[in-house]
Length: 559
Image 1 (cartoon, one colour):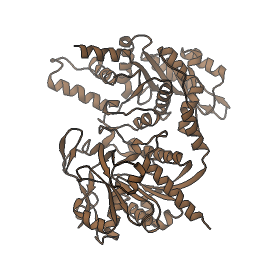
Image 2 (cartoon, helix red, strand yellow):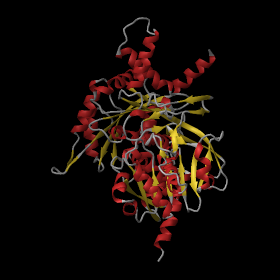
Image 3 (cartoon, helix red, strand yellow):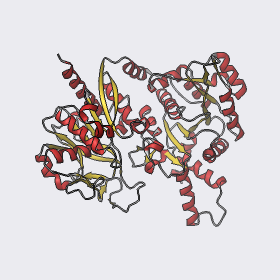
Image 4 (cartoon, one colour):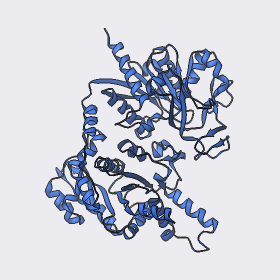
């Protein structure tokens, strides 16, 4: 009884910020929510995050990058929205599967309860059953945090997000005054022909929100320039908010400037005041240093990112940011050259990759463009260019080594060629899950959704390796998202050919990191290190890769 009471008390002291967006999509709710969290953390307030997505998929794991962009993976193995990556990059939080709910997940839970008979034969409805499940998801996240920031996906007016909006409308009655805030992100566009900023889209967006019973407390007005005071006064008057609660969310040169700009606008002061939070004065010097290093670097390095979704930059969101972080650690600007792996197949690696300081091949699914990625590996190996392969990029390195160094003609992954004579990469059928203490089993008939090796797994590093030099410790834990693995039947042949196995699972069943002998910097990892990189703590592998790439640049530039 006492434990339940203690938990209730913990949750009772937690306050909530609900972040919505209007007018158009892609205004940056995730960055705004993350920046709020960073500002509150800087003032000694403990925060966590929840993203509510309106789509019916249970999670984004089965969605195409063309549809959704990046799938962010948590330590506990959840496939989630990319905004969770922003939360972790900006704040000292580790998100979990409780940090992201979709409409599909909410409805799945409610329907499962109905099938079990939990509703005692009653009619199951959106209100109260769906909204109650949403409210449960929101409050379940609270533990000992001071503030939970809840981001509602979609745009006000979308039919899909109505159950989420109804749920947060209801929550004000259970939470009570001073324990919640509604923050609405809108657009104030500049019309060039009229040479004017226009407030009408914001007014209409707020009116739409008010029509479903939600009155925003703070407005974040996205604009390409500062809002004049008289315009803020006008917005405040017509949207029924205080003038000092109209905040300019101005376009910035780097996303890491957003917390600084919102602080200058007084956002954290308004939140602390309205929620009556105990907070000290914030120290944002770390963000000032980050911004300075991004905008005024001492060096420059060019990295070829060889992928097959290069027209969809959102598909590589965490990866791009991790490369930026590696640049921050080296006081270097990282210039990305986006290279379509299919173009390498058509034009050749020597044409597409000439003049690059480093080459990175990221993850991906399916056979399209794979031979171009393998060609990029070969080019990096033969020309001694620093190479970093992630997930599929590591598998391509293994395939290239098998074909061209070990003499295994036709070597491939069974994902791409089921009849390959040398499946050096194959479908993993079982592995030990250290989190549950169980052996996980999969085959070709397994469901696609959530059936990969997902989440954080331990890895032991070999001393003297590039990996050990970067991490400076023997055991690490990194996040995974894949179905195919290194085939240990070829371990001896490939190591004799020059492949170095520098990281393995503690039971030595799973190969996690490969390197090459006689190469300045060549490393492939089965996991996704980009998911754990932040601007304040750049990931050691990205730091080492950018450092090696700069050395290569210096070598190339010598007369």
